[in-house]
Amino acid sequence: MLKLGVMVSGGGTNLQAIIDKINSGYLEGCTVAAVVSSRPGAYALERASKHGIPSVCISKKDHTEPKEYDMALIEYFGKFDVDLIVLAGFLSMFGEDFINRYSNRIINIHPALIPSFCGKGFYGIVPHQKALEYGVKITGATVHFVELEYDSGPIILQKAVPVLDDDTAETLQKRVMEQAEWEILPEAIKLYAEGRLVIEGRKVRIIEK
Image (cartoon, rainbow, N blue to C red; front, side):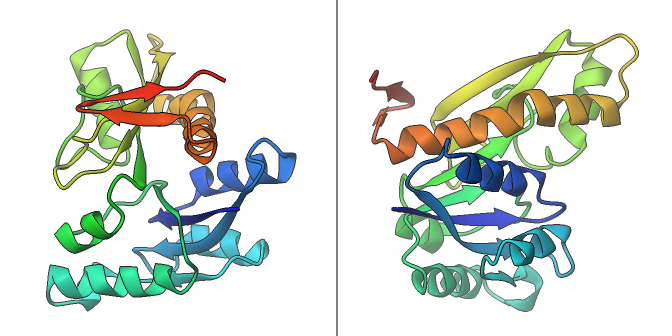
């Protein structure tokens, strides 16, 4: 059984997508063992509660040093013997201790096609606003392994989504979530669970079945 630790900051739609894929049998042999929110009152915590998943808010604001924050996360996930950390709309940054503890075992979903519209400050609605400002015709989402630098780890999967002429940042965000994020994040988890991801330098090779 692959035990997932899912980290969230808001509504938890990607968490729900993971839960749904587990319940459907698509993510066979996977379970969400624990959920951590960076914000108190995040609706994602309610989603976790509805499904009987242990959850807690661990806020960076409550820890004076990055090392303290890292250790709080490590201690919590350690209680559940978590195998893979999944950042599903998580907006805080960790330090070296957490990254090293779960080296090559942290994945993130980013709402753009990296290396476009990524890096510090590019989260939430911002990548979609910037995509519209730039006038791109295609955007999408990326799942990647996490390293210390923002959105810098090896890319696992990407999926493109069209930008429509009448899009707002909100309509584009919704389409990217529905057509890309909710599909490729569970797919990346499935590939990891099946042992089909091999990191080779800056690239991820997917082993065929």
